[in-house]
Image (cartoon, rainbow, N blue to C red; front, side, top):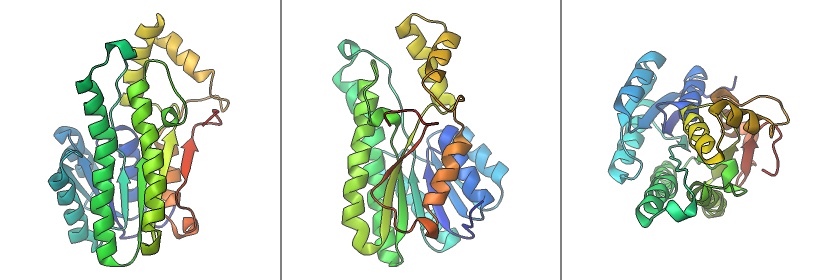
Length: 257
């Protein structure tokens, strides 16, 4: 475990899946964590279970004012925003001929603009504080290579890699590090949706589709939110102080990620 005692952390999309795993990790390492999620029941229940250093904010990452509420809350409880984890995102599964402008705009609005807004507001707070900080953004293996029927998702996640690299250059003078992570096959509710949707497109049962996915993972097992959370936590330690502008894969040696 790493030592994040009394650091101020905001995690978006913290109600379940990878975001939940990240929030739990930081709580266990001593941080004050504000959990931002659009799912009120999930995020309030999780905050209650994690104890007095966990604080729930019901909000949508497309809304700057709701992100700002989360940042203000962590500053109130921890005294500063030290770490911002822009994790919230969605996926759509559809062949290109079945997509439309509205579906494209929705996924870009949440997956790209949502992270841009979170990064903007976090950077403003960290610059104001004058002590640096860490931004961690969620990309995906699908941001590094294409996947049939996931063109919208892959395009949005590729944008996060370039955004993170650009922000790392822009914010380096303020000692704000910016990295992103590209999870592989991590078993979460999101991957349940992927397995269900892709099995239909591939004409397979859900179990057959999961077996097909697993064959691409040399490590021999699917990942867990804890696998991602441990790496995210380490990227936010002083040991990783010289790492910025990087895209870190957590995928059990699956290539070409």
